[in-house]
Image 1 (cartoon, rainbow, N blue to C red):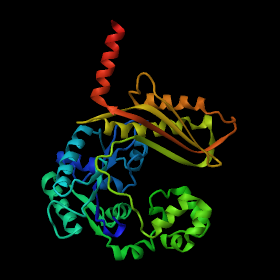
Image 2 (tube, helix red, strand yellow):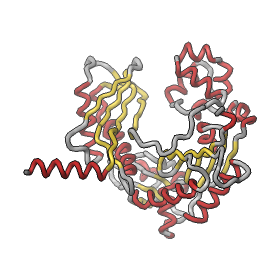
Image 3 (cartoon, rainbow, N blue to C red):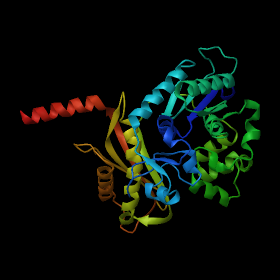
Image 4 (tube, rainbow, N blue to C red):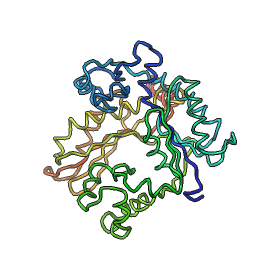
Length: 367
């Protein structure tokens, strides 16, 4: 199937966790709501649009969110409730197609090239899905329709909140031309800066730079950048893809030594633990057993160290402690400096199965 023959929808619930809280508690409507535990080590899980006006964003330290918006109403997250609403939304998707690839509780890709409903277009399908979500959950969703996944995801953000944006195959090149290169998947702030050094700030600039020059400068990633500049993305929607790893990482403005990484590891552990808790709540819960530390040196060498403890981490603090300890396994000179650090959890298993195995082990040890 070619890129032009696919019809992909990316659906993204609007400020999902915060919107659920405002729906269920009328006193919160119209107020700046921050879904987070209070405390110096907590991070923001979600922020209502009223809070976003003050600069509050997901994954931001809760103390910073409170400084930005002192009048914010902090609500502790209830992932079981969010997961229940997510299942409602998934059931709406399933009326139209079985090709559903969830990215998180609040967003998913749908391949609607062929649908169960026989609606005349992908646009009509997206409109029907958004209408059903509004009617059945009293929440709003934004959607993007495009010939492939990466364009659909960009499109869903184009008219947020409660919007729909369509990129048709003949519009792809024109749409991409003025777009900042940072909007392309995989182009973070560091890559964006490296491209800017070569005079490449828009996708149009990237396209004109040419495949050969991009490949010389960035290897295989350069070829991928050239494909994206042309709107090419052949990745198919993958239904029910299990989570292999949850992680958070950060690139520093200035390179740091191994010993200077501890506070950053602790902060990233908070983010990773919050993502893990979403995976571990509700039906079909899955938990991770393996702790992963990722490092990138100042000369762009990537190192990973992992550990599967006999007892899995039970909190963000324990995750941070284990991740920090993995620095002892880094066999680099003490003066080596690092430009990036990441903390991850992997080795996901079914939560019920893990509990049963643990109980059996403890019983055997006791006997």
